[in-house]
Image (cartoon, rainbow, N blue to C red):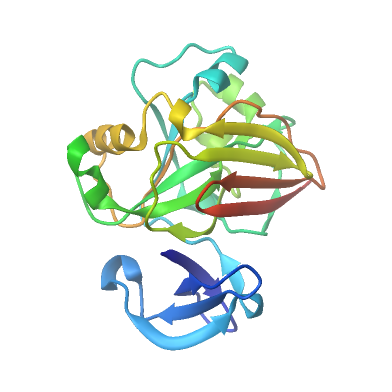
Length: 257
């Protein structure tokens, strides 16, 4: 099931997306599916008649995972972590599909990172690996935009990975997905620059959710970014970047100074 968040001429609403490409429709849901479950209203919209927005604005947090692909750690000159390397991103960093992102004035080296993102569906703490599937609402696509120069100088990553617009999410949430071997790609102005698979993650989805829940109580709508494959590079004014995860879809954003 694909669940999108969209606007017409009113407040954002959730809907179930169905149909073939070019003929897709949204069946609007009643209220918030994270707290009220999947209740269809019967009202439908053509996808072309609405504007998709970020499928979730986390209530409390986004948890990022650094250096979770060996080839990416190598290209950045880093050793592989012996346990998941975590960082926090504020929810003010989130933007949706097709939205422009203003590159921050404090950085001259902003890069893209295509990633699989996990969306939590229920409050949980200390989740055993074998029960992780019970707490996941679904999956979406992320671009973990990073100010590399700030990352080098700050000694922690809050500014480098948490500035406004640094966490595009979308285009929707896929609720059922086998994440063991999904292709993750990134295209800069139409050219493929990242091409990896979740099979190469150092720590898989279940390991990450279980490990993170030992430190943080996870709430419905929290998002976990699972890391990026090799091929990261810099963004410039006027660039278009497309992050795609197999089985979900493509997240497109535009960048400007």
